[in-house]
Length: 304
Length: 297
Image (cartoon, rainbow over all chains, first blue to last red; front, side, top):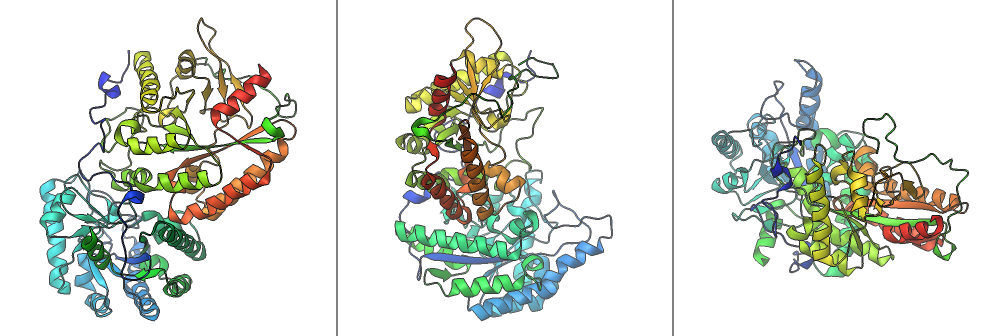
């Protein structure tokens, strides 16, 4: 007698296409080509600006959150280092390389550190909404009404504190519920960055756009999780860029390299040099087009 | 296997220094096969008492999206590199991919790749299945792959590496003749079967956890370049030892891992190295099992 019910070997969603209706299948290599305003590889720098309350909360604990018993001075302060020091190093590095980036900011960042958010905007960079603070996680254990209120609150607080209503959204740890895409659409957002299943923008069924922010290429994954050096991280970025440039040349279609950066990880004194060298290298490549996320989405939308 | 016994009785012990000489076609010393896992993971699979499908509540957006990357783009990226250097795939297939994304299966079929079963979905686990349920997934696998490609599957890699004590005997009863689930050797080995009427013979072909791209990137945390170097070292050693008796090297892959832009370039260099070396018999799993069976009887 099996402990598994008969239904375990029955498959009600076994059909052509996905086992959900959130978006449709397509093969990136078979889609009409995208042409960028310059170059063939769009390089999208996306920086996460995160404030971790020393009192963790939310449906799940965000990556990078507190570790020790309360009060975890060690992690509270080491994370906030990114906002006080690391992010400013990034701003200088971007200015020196002459490139524009996106900054995915918690609402709490805009409220607590107005000088930082003002400098982001003054530098010509984009602000993407990144929930309320690092307790503002979303998953399907969250009641849809509570999720709707959380996202609305984040949007309202960011707009009030920064003067800008973002058109893009990044969920903490890229995690959503089944309701999130519709809630983001209701909030008037144009795009989200949570789905890592593609390397070019695509449209969800409800009209929202996904701008894929590859988690495998993030400094968090390569340096913090996989424990590689900053130089190894930079080598991987160069290998990725070279491959994408080759693919763009052979296929005639534009490609995209998302580089996800975290100020308390890559903004450390002994690592920032690897980022600066990488930016200098890539900015000198004729295939590279550095662009903010909203710009990439707009160029893509105009061609599709 | 012997259910409940401390030694499951899967195979006999054969010291590595006293094996019959196996010779691969063309006098090659190492048979190299590439095993792309073409998988479908469900976004909202049913619960199983022994294993949780996803780390996060459904939808696990990163987990699901990462695997979906294979079926939207990186399958083609990986497959083109393999084709360019003359490596056919022996596909570990979630057979429901034939329904969900027939374009992926058709691409692999058009490249002349071999298919074996990796279960229906990689989110349905065999633990605790009744014999009837297990027979159903084997019969479903045979039927589904035959309908989609005309091929009759010969091999099995358990879905998400989940087994029951009867799996190996059952697949042999259905005429499958190789398993990829045992990791005890660098040469093809006979699997001991329940002696019963109608039971077939089963070869264990070396697959690999150790040089599986999933282990490389998510257990050993290698960079793309470190993984490529690992493959070359694995190849060099097995090619040298295979002069004594033919060895097998498998490169098990997942497009959503090896087909990422930062890894595929170094991987292509590893394939180029192996193809240019001259000691590799680049083959499919079925060809390797056939060549071995002819020599051992």
